[in-house]
Image 1 (cartoon, rainbow, N blue to C red):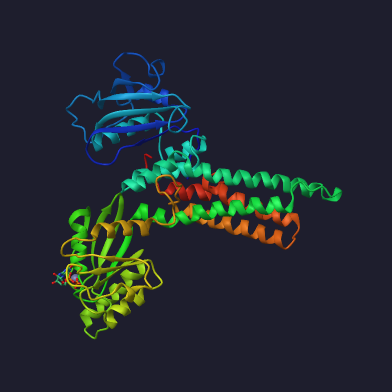
Image 2: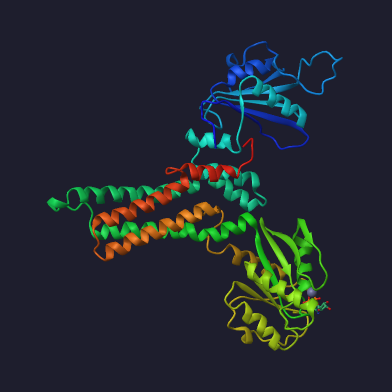
Length: 472
Ligand code: GDP
Ligand code: ZN
């Protein structure tokens, strides 16, 4: 990513398309001068002389040097691009930490691009993707995990993922990671001091203190790392596959679940032998339900294709709902289906509870979670929903309060941190030289530092901000 903080950058900050209002954002040392060229306050004052952080009515005017294409040569030159509300935010009290001007014009594509063009004509440079947020990071307004939460916030598709993004944006993850890192750095300082004085045989920390602090760190790192699976569910939703032999009531169950919770988007219809996908929203958690053709052995080529897809859907699933017909004795086919998911998160759904029961719960005793339902009457569905949500959200503790890791980059760094910390613990146990233990502690702290950006490389920054679009 090119560009230094000396440039003043500009970009359209609102989405493409028509809107009531559109915003062109400027940030950098030169904003007041540039705004002086492009913006005329109705009050007649200069923007820099007016109050910071207040909305001011203004005309946006094209700089004299600006040529506007496609203009009718007969018409008199365009004197105004639009009327707008303009706000000057004096740094460091701004999103980027620099002087910022936002021009809020009418939200048309042409207007906004002409205003941007006018700013460039007056000396601004078009911003790179994510450059505003990158500047906020470089100027110390946010740490790297908060910068990433800006993107998560914009992209959130469920209330739950928005909640997690908002907590991260407010620094919850950063605080937790920093507290682990600080403890390790404190320990490292002692260990290193011990190394310097090793000739005089002065030890600054006991082996026991060392071991306990490292163990605590590992526990905290692991807890964060475990929350990742749940974080993924919150961000992307969960895939739940409905399995069972024909006629046990898979489609009926799907329809019952959809009746009350059908999500507004996505419906991929297919034939009866196809995998059919629908989404529901369970208290802010998006769940993609996949109805399948069953795991039957067959020779029929069309059905084979259905089964192939079923197996695929099952492999990709976060959880399986195995549906049984409770009004009939279990068949080998039922057992095969249950066996196929024995090692995976699953709920056994005993359907047709409105008919006289034949399947006994003891037969299913090896399966921890059994939900009796009737897809016909809707009985038991509430409990099924609760269990479903509970299973998918397990491992993260209380979702509202726990810090949840949603970002792949963070998860990778946590795993490296845990590995290095374990290595330190192992070396300690083997009575290795303090220098070696210090190296591992340093590696742990560095991996953690990558999450918040206390340790960054150009490569990390490039990767993080490349995901952003222009204007953020
Ligand atoms: P699938 O092949 O597993 O998708 O099963 P369907 O959903 O197509 O249902 C097969 C048959 O069982 C249909 O005639 C349904 O009406 C019936 N059925 C499904 N669920 C129930 C239930 O809870 N109670 C009763 N009595 N019948 C059900
Ligand atoms: Zn079906």
